[in-house]
Length: 120
Length: 108
Image (cartoon, rainbow over all chains, first blue to last red; front, top):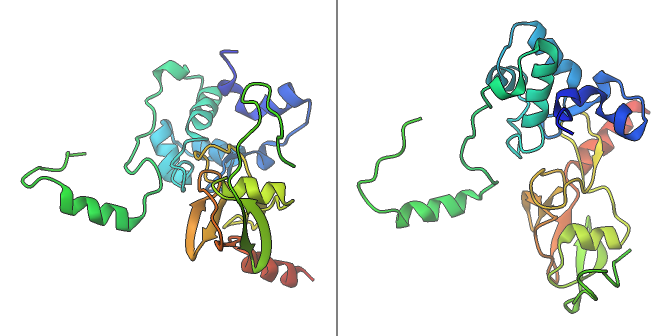
């Protein structure tokens, strides 16, 4: 089903036959951001997944958007009519998995000298 | 509840029986199985309460992506219990349990 994500808000009703209010439908599980909050961000002028992320914090929690990034893009497409294929996905930022600071601190010792960090 | 016979994987191999603690209570599990699996088998389905609304959360994706099953393990917070093997004497705590208790008392 190609249009699955573009109908995030009605997915529950369609699949499970359960009526689900938009204001109860959590899109970003880590930051507890609902469908309604994302729609509100779009209404206030956010036009890209990146803007919605920075405005609502959806996708900035512990899992870094692993569950919600596609759903957010889907809602944006649903609300604004922009095709999903034309939306620029929000940025991935390292680390992609939760990493203990001690692990990172040990890595720095082992990294070869003189290597520059990638510019963002 | 545990899967004793799997149509594809046959009978699962379990490590030796161990005891770990959940919020001070002893829980039985098998060495090497994920913490979340041991807790579910022992009937504990709430693993944490959310930061904002203090709602209960349990296993969601069960493969280490969604971070819904995070708990405080041996004093370290935000450990994904669905991908962290359990061992003997491990100290596991429900995350935000105190905050949930405070919310309940406020609502009384």
